[in-house]
Amino acid sequence: MADFNKVMLLGNLTRDPEVRYTPSGTAVADLGLAVNRSFKGSDGQLKDETCFVRVTVWSRQAENCAQYLKKGSPVFVEGRLKYDEWEKDGQKQSRLSVVGERVQFLGAPRGASFQDSGSGGDAAGDTSGGTAPQGVASSSAPLQEALNGTDGDEDDLPF
Image (cartoon, one colour):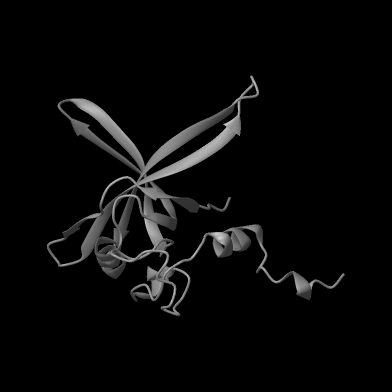
């Protein structure tokens, strides 16, 4: 049987990225991510649920996260689940976390605001190629269209 381990998360950072370096010099950043969900309960009332996820990113992507992200920054993370087990004070401990293979920045870079739309760059920074964000996202509409499978151009429909 084939195995498949893929996670896609869209949320906000719960704290500033914490970067450290391995003895060989490879950067490792730990991100805390909050993913929110709204739903109607059995009583018909709208309820909110938050899932907190630990995400680890490596190499240049870790350095970019530490440089451009801060607490509250919206991000889209693609990665895989990782299960860790260890023993502490005679007690078995375990944790399920995410290894981020791709982190896409969705908000404005540090110090910029959404009103600064004259930069002419990309809508969001994608660190998978090792480059810094090029512009400022003016809204989440392109993301919603991408997640819904549309590109926003309704005139090209064949019917």
